[in-house]
Amino acid sequence: MNSKPTFTDRLRLLFKGILDPIGAFLNRTGLTPNAITLLGLVGTSIGAYMISQGKMTTGGIVLLLSVLVDALDGTMARLRGESSDFGGFVDSVSDRYAEFITFGGLLYYFLSQENYSGVVVTFAATAGSVLVSYVKARAEGLGFTAKVGILTRVERYFVLIPLLIFNQPFLAAAVIAVLGNITAIQRILYVRVQGHERMRKARENKEYLH
Image (cartoon, rainbow, N blue to C red; front, side):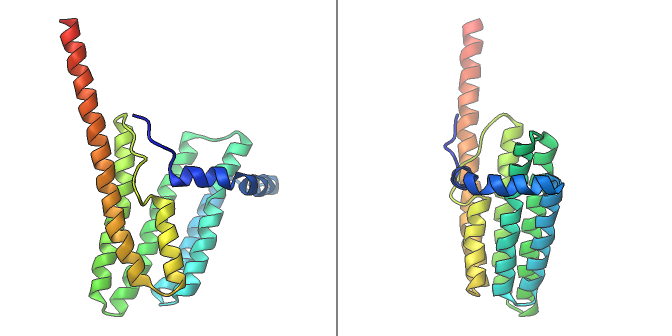
């Protein structure tokens, strides 16, 4: 079953004319794609610290810059002709760490404010974000596709960063908690359909052979 291009895929095409020249410049400086990936993670850690201290606007702006930096690693690898499975693996793991660190900053902030409703929604947002990525990875490991859903990683940042900049951390966590878990369920159901189709074809083939 072929899935439609995601919002992330469309963004890559839309901004290709901007990312390619910047990626080419960074390649000429001698920086590697993995170095850019790690630089983005460092930036995210700084943003998360700002968030943990209640400096939401500053933290949101730092996160925005980090996301923009992180968008360049894949571009650099493609321009070098060095796109690899390991590079994709490093990028994916880095993305998961970035999300954990970001939500960790939010969690610390809500705990320091004794805002336990904020703690609960941040936990739910973290769980939803992790499950969205895990369901996709697990599905692809079994030969299915799962690039569907209303709130993929880029869209989560489109929710999180503006709301942090406008000092609405609870709303940011709540929206991601709800829509992130809905997205995970969407992907589970999408894989379920593929699984049933695979079993149907297997039964038909078995009957044909007999």
